[in-house]
Length: 146
Image (tube, rainbow, N blue to C red; front, top):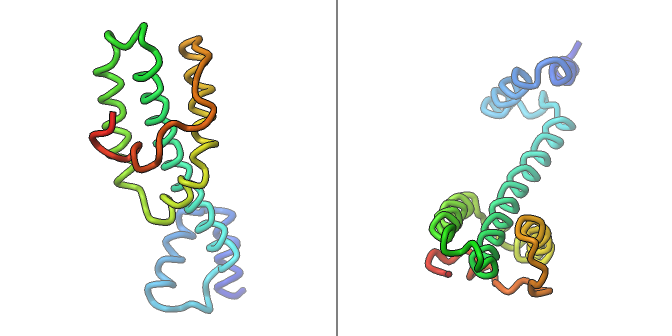
């Protein structure tokens, strides 16, 4: 059996060991021995996972901005907590944000906003929210905004 066939089989059996072997092959520049099909699949999955993480953080920020702005009945009791959550999510988002992710978030901002609104409607029983996202991505990321 060739090394590549062994790597493909290893991927099915022990993906952690497959990763170690793949890293070794990359470091030693043994590119012809790589299991490219599974390497590409793993890199694509990694990119999707990282982007889903920043999308989730952005959605959480928007949820808490909406709670602060619209749930006045609970605002006095919860606003410090919500502001703290916004700050924490902003730190995490900014630590994971790349230029590419920022561009993608701008493209998906309305969709992310709609998901945030759905959650807030369920949590609060409030009905009236702006149809379009009232915040720009720059505002959402701005440490001192709201």
